[in-house]
Amino acid sequence: MRWSLAISLVVLASALDVSLAPMFSVWGAAPSFALPLVAFLALLAERRAAIWAALLAGALADLTDPAISGPVAPLYLLGPHALGMALGTSAVIQIRGALKKRSLLVLMTATVAVGLLSDIVWTFAWALRGWFPQGAAPWGEGAALGALGGEVLGTLLSACAALPVGWGLLRLLPWWSFPATAGGARFAVASRS
Image (cartoon, rainbow, N blue to C red; front, side, top):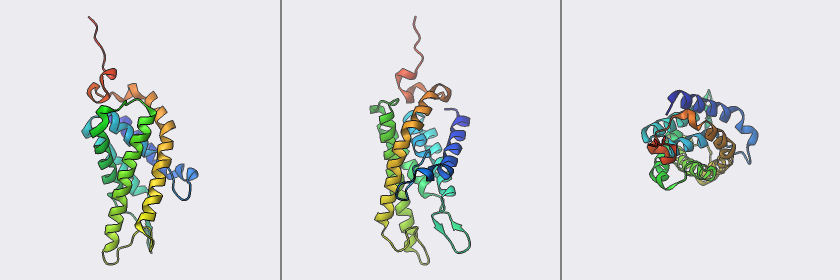
C-alpha cells in the first residue's frame, strides 16, 4: 500500500468531514467520508497497514470533533473513534476472505460494520468518562442510547456516502499497490508461459 496516498486521502476525508459533511446532516447526524475509506482499506490493504490507517483516521476524527464545549475551550477525548475504527477494521479483516472486495455493496456493508463498532466504543468511552466525578458526557443529562442512535444514523449516512467515495477509490485502485494476497487473485499479475 502506498502510504503517501493513504495519508493524503485520510487527511482529505477528515477535512471533508469537518467542512462538507454537515451540509448533508439529517436530524443532527452527519455522514463521515473517512469511514468508507477505512472500510476500503480494511477490505484491500494488509492487516497491519489497514489497522494503522484506521487508527490515524480515528485519531483525526477525535481531534476534529469536540464532543463537549467546555467553559473555557472545547473538550477533545482522543481515543474513542481511533480504537473503534481499529476494532471495526479488525472485524472486517477477519471476514474479508469471504467477500467480493471490489463491490460497492460490500463496501457499504463494511462501512456499516466499521461504523457500528466505532459508535459502540465511542458511546462506551464517553459513558465511562461520565461516571467519574466531574466527568461529563456529550449527551448531557440524556441517555447514552439516544446518543448511540444519533451515531448509528451518522453511520448509515456514511454507508450512503460510500457509493460515491467507493466509486472514486475503485478508480484509484492501480495507484494503491495493494498486495495480491490482500486483494485476491484477481489483483495479481498473471504470468503466462
